[in-house]
Amino acid sequence: MRPVYVTGVGLHPFGRFADSTVTALGAAAVRAALAEAGVARGGFQAAFCGTVYSGVAAGHKVLTSLGLSGVPIVNVEAGCASGGAALALGAGQIASGRADTVLVFGMEKMPRGIIRSSFFEPWREEAGLAATPAYFALRAQRLMFESDVSVRDLAQVSVKNHRHGVHNPNAMYRKPISLDEVLASPVVCPPLHLLMLCSPNEGGAAVVLSSTPAGAGSVRLAAAQLRSHLAGSVLGEHTPLSGLADDGVPTPTEMAARAAYDEAGVGPEDLDVVELQDTDSGREILSAEELGVCPRGGGGRWVRDGGGEMGSALPVNPSGGLLSKGEPLGASALGQVVELVWQLRGAAGARQVPDATVALGHTVGRGANACVVILTR
Amino acid sequence: MTEPRPIAPGLLGNGPHGPTLVVGRCVECGRLHFPAGPACPYCSAAPCVAGEVGPAGRLCLFTVVSNRPPGYPGPLPYGFGVVEMDGGLRVITRLTESRLDRLRPGLPMRLVIEPLFTDDAGRPVLAWAFAPEPTA
Image (cartoon, rainbow over the protein chains, first blue to last red):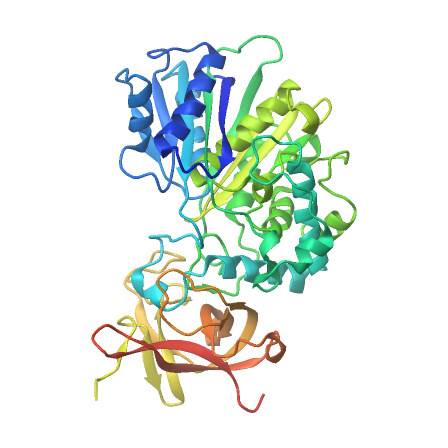
């Protein structure tokens, strides 16, 4: 298999943009990535577009607006991991030798309010079972019952990520918030308060992959692994109606992480910077445990010891995470990749993690697809 | 009097001890799943046989839904949680109790089948939920 390099990245900020179409959001990110890579129309042999809510031929519309070249364009849906899935497919094209240059991008304009998802049959919606934040709440409660995670720990995750987000000009929320403010925000589904949940929003992200490094300090895509769910868990992103009490079934994140560490030849102890799924603050703690950033059952201790903070041994979500950026599903995984490429290049400005050489990105989404990406310099 | 209808076919049953959920039981591995499907989600053996579990359960996890989820016409707030039934089957479910101070892990629960809302044709629509055992 050939090595895969990231030779250009582009981002449309995450937020709400009433005057922009989803096509425009994607096109802005793609244009920036292609320009940085020095790739013109016809300079890539395939394109993969991650999106969930953008409708038919969404990626084709983006590339139509920039000038078509006849290459295969594939639209990829894998819930919150859609961009990661697109990246894994694109990387496979380079690694296998089918293509020398591939464009991967993702964009979204999320509806407002609790995400409506055709994942749920109409009768499940009628039964009140499409209450997405309630699944997050049950998962956070399980962490609290099965380990020493407290509501204050959940709040602290949000405090940390919002403090990081202050320095990210591409984030939706850039104000620091205090522990008391998080705990005083309305309860959405106990134990989760409003400020412990990310906002669905809008944005775009793009990367150009190549078989040839861009030059000195070039960033290598060392792993991009996607896994889906095993039967048996009742609280995964697959939001099932039932499962069996056989705890210990590996989660999609654990499976994807193991495969990605194997592919890249690194372990969690080698990481310098991590961007992981924090759709709610309990999800950040669980993600950290599943990725091996902290021990299983040690997530509460990890938070209280300042784990993941800037200046700690392993900063987590220096971008501010989804809690600060908001979550445009198709763009969120690639947004992490763009951020991590900037980190590895030393171009992350006030949120730079010093001397970062190994970076990990993680998303997990409905379906349930988990994607773990490892980038190295 | 308009006849009530179940919220979906093949979910709700009635056993000798009260209401039940209709589950799939794998003839190969013996594991249960709900709603009952044509093949076992654990080992892919097919066909599975239909069985019924309930009404007894035990509360594992619980929260409260106060903001109206998409497509839900019923009353708010409502409890929402995971209840473990016989055979180790854990079910995502509405709870009749939405006060957290009346819920705790391990609480004995009982399946109930009740009208949740009235459809456009004026028919009461039956859905399941779990209620704390009255004696608990």
